[in-house]
Image (cartoon, rainbow, N blue to C red; front, top):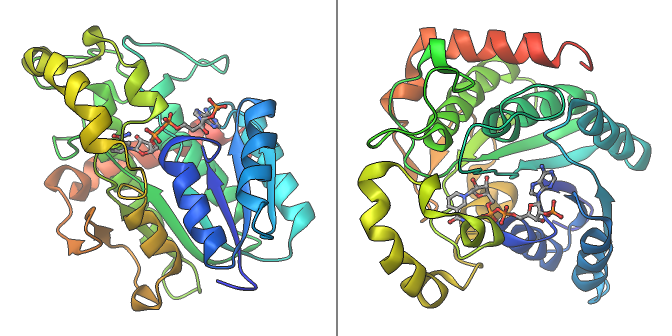
Length: 285
Ligand SMILES: NC(=O)c1ccc[n+]([C@@H]2O[C@H](COP(=O)([O-])OP(=O)(O)OC[C@H]3O[C@@H](n4cnc5c(N)ncnc54)[C@H](OP(=O)(O)O)[C@@H]3O)[C@@H](O)[C@H]2O)c1
């Protein structure tokens, strides 16, 4: 990765930070994004301590203007961005809106990757890696894209729903950039004992999963404390020569190309998600 520049969102903690660490260790120049300025500064110092080139910006990518600020910051620092990893995640226990009036999980998992990718296309010369999660694959509900109708159900969660939407949006993006030197792929990280998971309350889980939550709380630090594991698939998609030219593909936590879930392939769902992203990002794109 020497000579390559990589931007990882949500990279001052959790899986994003481990992804950034892995890419810095491979010689990449790494640009970090997190909301908290002190955490951002600290992460850049920590990851750059071995001599690597690591810089950070404090910004909330669920806010459109801040996403635009990140894109401008990147463009002011490099003529070419080789890899964009859209990693930011969110999982509030109930439906919440950003200050722009967008449902938070939709903003974090779908609108931010869409907007940042679009804004960075003029400098993007390589790979976009979008991070999915949860249990994606249920149908996209066009009348519920921002959880207007339901946020949690027996097995439904808007978190999973927005990850399916991210995959649908990634497929559509991959079609649009095909043949132009940019690729768009999706990585599944697997579980990690991260700040996001630690902050999740019982009421944030679909009803059917709640009995398992106490067990997960006890087991998670031991089973999922090593965040290099969930960072493997994103590091692989960002850096491996094995995926040179691969576009529109979905990779498992074991870095294996795998079938897209049915919900992501539905053209009507893709249309609905794409149209909403275009409409909402219109103010800055
Ligand atoms: N953890 C898991 O088990 C798991 C499993 C499957 C998939 N995933 C997916 O993997 C990705 C990373 O998950 P994670 O658990 O590592 O998340 P996390 O714990 O929330 O990640 C924390 C990092 O993201 C930053 N961040 C959070 N919201 C941000 C925002 N709006 N704008 C900019 N930076 C932001 C945080 O810094 P600040 O707080 O300072 O902003 C911190 O650097 C997400 O897409 C998630 O859905 C996670």
